[in-house]
Length: 513
Image (cartoon, rainbow, N blue to C red; front, side, top):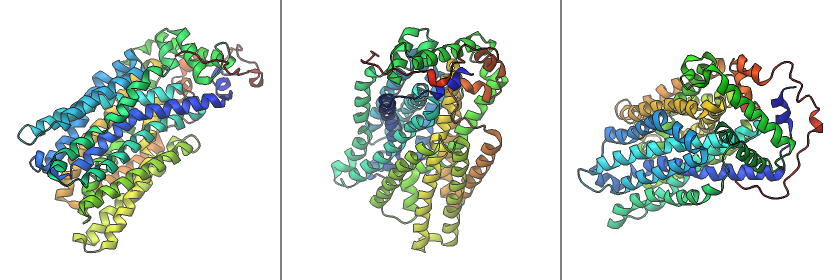
């Protein structure tokens, strides 16, 4: 019997389930800062005070401000984020990322009317990109490494719940400040809306020392006793409990096997075919997740609604409703992703988004210049459909898939390399969307519709299902049979005892973290 199958079959005590949910929700605060930082830009692009401070920026300047953020994320993914996650650990990496993001937000809020305002925005956006790249990878890493295999998708999806909650709150805050129309409101309104993200950031800073580090990272660093204590806390079991002993042994076996393998260096992500099979899939998935049009929806949603002839404040109100809808859709995906699987939700999401983009591209051509209000309202409705498709597909699944398929010793670097593909896609979309809408109008939607169709076909033919697989089983899924053999040798009978004889003894007292 394989060790992984035994560990996966063990029951998780209810108190442990509560702890896992609480930790993943808490780390969702970091993702909340990530989402807020993105969403607030959509509201300030249409703020009169921002327009005045930057001397009425045109579409190309807005595209530059948007795209430069993703240059920062790309730099961080390639050179900064993974060393921080591997050296400091997953939780302190998230702390560092949020702290750097707050510095970037301060630069943006300090942009004053004049020639230097654009430079301040660009510097601030780059710094935010550097920090949020760390957040966007360290949080799903943490969630995936503390979660049991059968529910891992649900826990990692909380990363996206935090992200979309941040987006929603950013729109509601923008809507609230848009009502402050005095001269002071024009000057301070968009700056204060930027600084609201400091509230969840400070809460996160205060709480992070009390969170346990992931057992897999601790084992990777040789801190076996600390890993045992962390695992006992996460599973609400005694240090000597079967569930702790067996899961810890499985993690140790996986880490030692990968360390002993010739492919233990990071370059093996490119030179060892089974690892490269994981890397290109994860990177392409991140690229498609942005090229599907999501970046434009996050940054230019009020502008899109304004193009439908909707008044300024109402665009923010609808944007807040749309972003709030994302929270509900993502929660639905928490239930679906471990039942229907990653592939099914991705494909369905692509189909829904393609249909929504088709409608939004065709109706303005059939009824130009907002001559038909029913057509404009239909476009708004199908933007909501697009939101549903993204929230059950690319939004959470791209991060879940990337966070779970790499071995422990290469997980941070692999996920960061993969996420850099998303940065490239975002840079392209951030430049293409505003310029495209200015030149060819709603035909821009057809370009992204085609990408969604192609993406769904690619997922169907090239992406294996990973639901209910332990992190240590991914070697066999992606063809690394030699490592899989080391982890589960055919003659191994050490764990052949029946599953029902394995007990989980709940802890009588808390374990320090």
